[in-house]
Length: 491
Image (cartoon, rainbow, N blue to C red; front, side, top):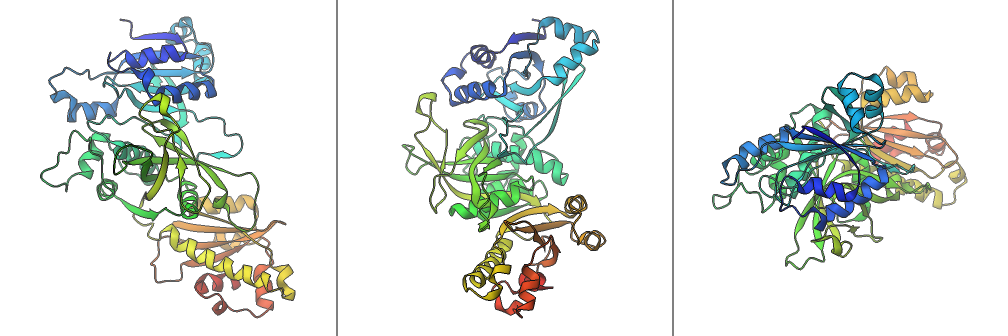
């Protein structure tokens, strides 16, 4: 068989290519079939270049850990499907192989990414790197990186986050969620990105003697997921997320810095008792278009985008309005049952560099306390109230270098003082913005100790608030519970 082929894209042809390695796949009956049909229609796929006998690093490690020892002779090679938004013909690939610059440019400029098809029954979707949908100006995908593919000597690239389906032999949903998160944290913090088999092994080193490591059909506990994170020389930050506001704020604070979050929750509507737990990787979010100027920017999060191995990459999860966190999900036991279940979050695990010691909720508490007292002063109707505009608070983790680069571009009046000042490598930046314009930044040391005043600096961006408070002789001691941050605001 020829090592490559060119196909016109259609969902029927894609189904056949997924079923090709194993006759038992029956891809057309799955939720993934519905999801990919919509996904490829949205990104405008027109052609597929099929690359056969492809060796995928992650599957090869999984193959060595489990499949090679099976009685059934599973194949060690995969098929890689490359997608393009222009019509690609066989002659284009032949000309590219012959060195044609025109054909090479055509393939490169229309590249949409790839899917690795594994020879695994019922679980064929391997490493998948596809462009995201059109952002529409409100969708944000901060947890992306560049992936390079080489098609017979032609370098291709796509900005994405790798996804793959769990195979229930070396990976359960938690393993797949961690694997996707490590794709980004490995680039951010410089650790080796483990394969699904290695993640399962790292997570289950301390399991009871009466439990199997492989096949990984029973999933991972939160403690085991934390062990897998520590094996990458990272620290697992546990965030409670049963409150919708806390979940929105945590997603915005960490994912906004490019750090994916692993969200664990219960799938409601299942017939099982107790209902099963499920893990997804939060890769992005959607903000409402209208600024409120009365609290947290993160309160405007209306949707999350998640790598959900039971659905597909960048799957949408909508918030159900209410104080308790509750999300929609497309998880189902078949394509005809989509939309009958909900996802109730229970906890979030964030893999962070070990020097990032201060969790998000510590900074969030101080900012909410500060804002509470500022709101109280405005509500009191004092003469100074008109000089205390309300604030929209944007709280995110930043590196000091990224922050200083942004500050230089903004031409802030405080620029030279801050640029020359030594600051921690990692900062929590709480940016207050006023509806009429202007504001200020409060910088928190993300590498400090809990008992210290972590707010190290105020950066002015044209706000009347600090001067108004000083002229009214309102001291930091007025802000009970936020005295440290208030002292920097008044400095």
